[in-house]
Image (cartoon, rainbow, N blue to C red; front, side, top):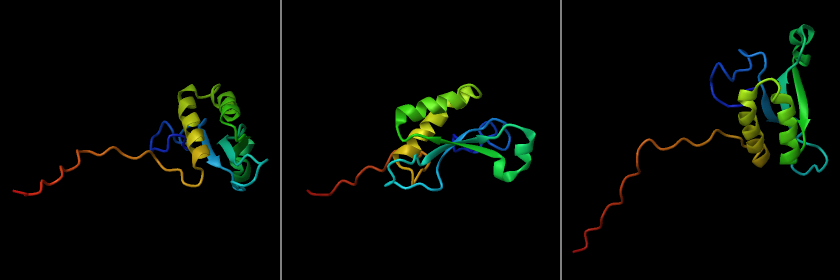
Length: 122
């Protein structure tokens, strides 16, 4: 449950009571037409649910459509953590685009690449 995918107190599901994540469902298949395959994950409400590991997290199935999925994410995330809304939507877009290999954005190179060597043709 870390929408940003970074190690920070603000995004951590352990430190925050209202953290959100988007993940591929356990029964995901690219070939299945009807099933969603994606889910929004967040902590369940209530003290009883927090003491039971099986019920500690609420999982909401997200539709395959980007527009419908974004509306559902906005419905759940927008009323609790407006600061994470854009990050959760970006995560949903990444998971939807390539669900089997979700990686962090590539880091920018710290310095310019070496110039090509000039050939000595004289």
